[in-house]
Length: 186
Image (cartoon, rainbow, N blue to C red; front, side, top):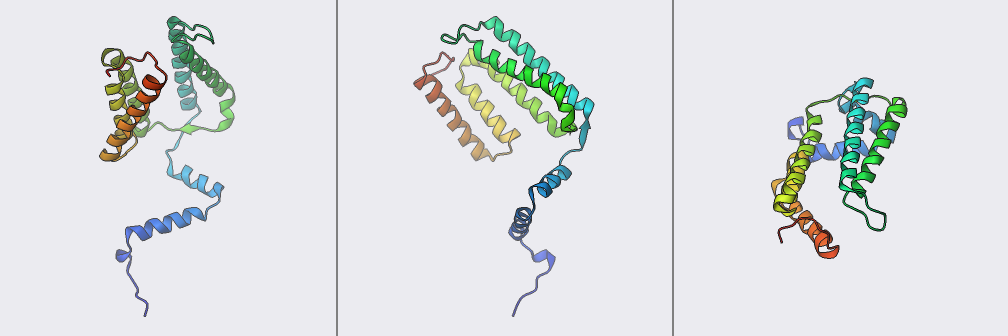
């Protein structure tokens, strides 16, 4: 004899399994429409232009700062070489988006979740300011933990474990294997 359950007796696992099965049955177009419906409202063309301008100006400023650090040559790059290259690429992408981005539709409206990017930037600036003073290990550990726990929503255990693994990997790659001159404690 089959048992009939009420809605109150349906488990969370069954609901999640049904949602996963329903999502698998959707076409890519339907799935994209569902994501768009669940996301923040469009911000409009002025918001898209404003955010593109901010990124382009910041990238241009970074390019100028990296020039002050010196570029060197491709055979003997100075500290400003790669920041300059990345900054120039970001400026080109920003300028291209200002011209061609109008065809791509409207960007998302700024919401409270938009502040996560600002928090990420502030924590990255903190890393840059602390590295010359106390080395990269502690600031990188804090940055990684903040990004994983507070910006990424990981559990305390996962954020702690992953942060330690990231710093150890960076140490082994950049200090031990490559012998770079990054300020470090050990």
